[in-house]
Length: 190
Image (tube, rainbow, N blue to C red; front, side, top):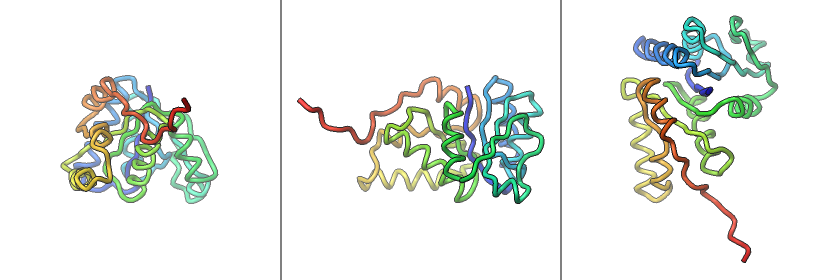
């Protein structure tokens, strides 16, 4: 099993770095591979370094322009270099069995929401989860609940988005995951 990890290119508070390292270490010790953005910076680098130190499989996927900017992780046994950010996300999705977001910023949100939306549209049936470190994702979860309350988001879709706190909880979530029906389906032709 492999998990795509979306997270920040900045380190953030020390508690976030510690949690990211523990999360990656625990995944590696459980035999779960990590697919991530291929960087050596921020929480991305923390995740890669911790998983590698624990003997885990780590696959980086990075666009050439970020390799040119010297943010690629040189210590990865497997680094897929792609041309665009769109290609990066597609390759990461193809290599992964689940998606998680650790703390991060706009890029992390964009990756998370694209993966989650692809599931809603039936492009995959893979679990998607937030790793909630120090309540980081709670304001987002509150906003998503507001979307449900106002009729923009089906409650079943929000219920299918995992909110976990560590690797063990993520693995339990993935094991019990049941993907909701596609958002859109063509009418039957009877």
